[in-house]
Image 1 (cartoon, protein in one colour):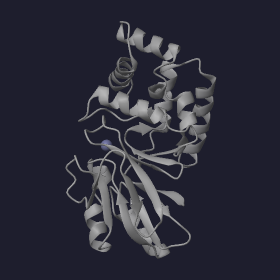
Image 2 (cartoon, helix red, strand yellow):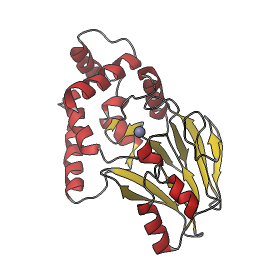
Image 3 (cartoon, rainbow, N blue to C red):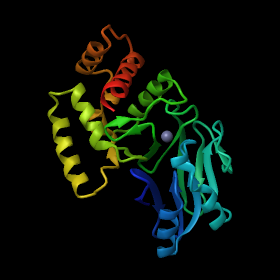
Length: 258
Ligand SMILES: [Zn+2]
């Protein structure tokens, strides 16, 4: 299995999944059809599946045109969000198989950014949409802070070697906020340097490994004493559990950093 980024809009990634033993392929979160069609035409690939993580337009805007162009393409997505183009509604723990590709993924329900957000886990990778970003996490829009905290706790427990494919290139800004939370972290300072170098050369900073996130992403480090202390200092009160620490970190970033 190969996974490549197709850039869309300002900073979105549409992930293209291919295999060298078939012309069938899949894309994740096609907010725009143009980058997808252009690479599929060039390489004579046939789109058999679309994986959708959540309802936002920058993840779904290309689906109608892709369905028209590739009739029969299956569109997998969460059944409890309003995404009219879904042909295969998915739910938590469901196993899905990508048509013509002999690749299986498990659906993880990870609400918070939206009420029905899902991720796709399998073959050593996680497509996590706008829930977990490299160095950060998505905003809480139509889900709740408690949901988002539980979803991040769930991702935290996956195998640390899991490769995380999120949907935006936000890493540089995220790492900057991480250094607000943990200004002494040497490993975070190193990450900042390597991210800056990559961005300068227009090299994607995604995917990252879960281990790297566990070491440097404040939103996955809500059980670390120094992260708890920083969040408590910002909140001005004691924080008693992961959800409270997460909520303080997220509000801190929303209000003071972004
Ligand atoms: Zn979104």
